[in-house]
Length: 277
Image (tube, rainbow, N blue to C red):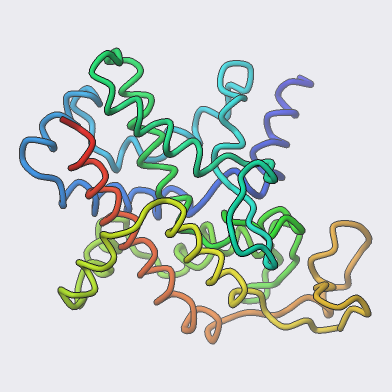
């Protein structure tokens, strides 16, 4: 029983371990799969035992139910990049998101890797590239990726991390196939070509730059410069003092989420076309 509640605690209160939610991750997997060359698509399906990238995309979150076996992967889902730091140094972060992505790519490139190791690496890669594009998974090192930031969304209490993981996406009431179709349309060819470039560090920098925009204004101001009162991990905060978010916030940030989901899928597909041989 104690182990059961420990697992629940990891799942529900570790705000840096889950990103986009099932729908968002499936969107990334589906977009990536559609961008694969025919040969790579066949090899990917073979590695995954006939399953799709969209189905495999949530496996790294599902295995959190087995902390004894997979606990070492829990800090792969995020990294910290403080506002004041120009360069990223994962040695100063409790999370290993960028390092974990590079490690999975190395396994897929290695001709000596077993089928089992390749399947593990591929399932994680599709998930982690999605995580990298959620701005709060490149955290500021202060508020557990927005998990301690108490907000309301259409009158319901939540936190900023959960809102970006699932709340804003789920509010659209779209299936992952509908959302993938919607976010894939209307992009200029030159933008698509530019988005395919870069590497995990440059994509993380994009998330860091976006991150500063997603925090709503304080209802009550803190006396400490740069501190957000509604993000304090300790103490209580009256519901009237939490930011109240609704249609305006969705209208402003759903286009950002849609672009990040599309970029993640596009870039994942490009990585796989280069890596899976």
